[in-house]
Image (tube, rainbow, N blue to C red; front, side, top):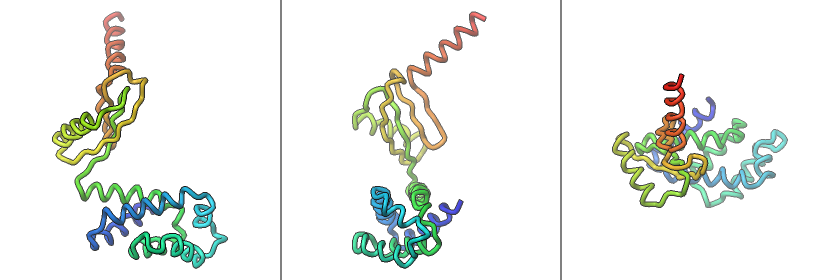
Length: 177
């Protein structure tokens, strides 16, 4: 995927500068600002706006708020007509930063909101299990009734009451059949 190659290239620059986290934060800020303004988003993606005009907009908009490295990267993206994939580049860049920092991001889905302490305890247990730094975001979904569903990458750990009830129901049908 093209976005992956751009993210990899920018990540290599960030590593050389020992600035992975700060350049990722700058990239997030740029994506956020562009996405908040539909006209700006369209201008960066439009073939009718010249590359030079896009670079002028970039310089004026992010004059001193982002590093020269990030500006240079964005100018390459403009030169190659790739601003439409900037969001994907950000996602891939984050995965490279997480891999470098030995981090797994995930979600903990619960029926009621978890406390900070509960999230920290769960993160600690999962970090020990996977030998990585696990960070979780809590999402509330009342349909799971109780317990927790943890999603880490492609893996799910389902400790919800809803799934336990479903398994019991299946077992009962097998016994009855």
